[in-house]
Length: 323
Image (cartoon, rainbow, N blue to C red):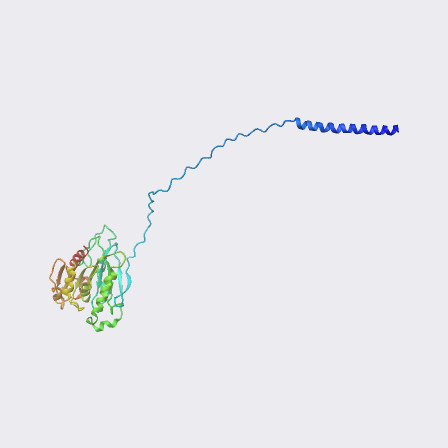
């Protein structure tokens, strides 16, 4: 029994020592934890630097616009242009438009004689003379045209030109009209002339208020008889009331409207002299008589056949008709 108690006593003592050892260890750990002071982390002093604000852009206000850089313009096409147009009755006609070298130029409508065509005008030296292109080399003085028969035109004056074929002539069909004679189709020729005047004033870049007619034989009457709005003058070579319209009455109407008219004849040219003198001369109506029996396009076809004084008289008319 004593021995048994003694064993119990030893066990208790052992447990007590063990317990103290465990308790002492925990106390050291605990003390270390509780007594250690943690060095505080340095506080960061943040000074908020204000973000610079953007200066607002000025409100849009009208400012001077930039001048665009000049662009090169293509050279104008001055070559002849084939034109198809129509008379009031629907007849198709063909003409050729020859632009002037300067914009805003007056336009001259050339009307051929019966049984001829616009090619007669196109072969005439008057064509280039009217367009009056500048001299390529300013150091070279210009020379008069048509062997000196056509005078120098003012350097700044240039005319656009429109030629056409009356129906039944040249490129304007049908060709069987010619065999019927001009009287049978006089009213139709007047429709053609009126359409030519109208289309000539519509070409781009021309002065539509100065459309001028120059005609020979039936064309001489046509330029007078159909010179309406926009037409400022008519130059008649060998007229004869060929298109069944009284020449004197037609001319007097033009003169009353302030238009310029000229009449040209050869002394042995059938009814042309009497026709020209059926109207009294004035500042707006002048008559030019020449010797021989020339008729119509003969006056203008070849330089050697052109009468002296014809060119200056024509230029005087053109200057008066463009004022």
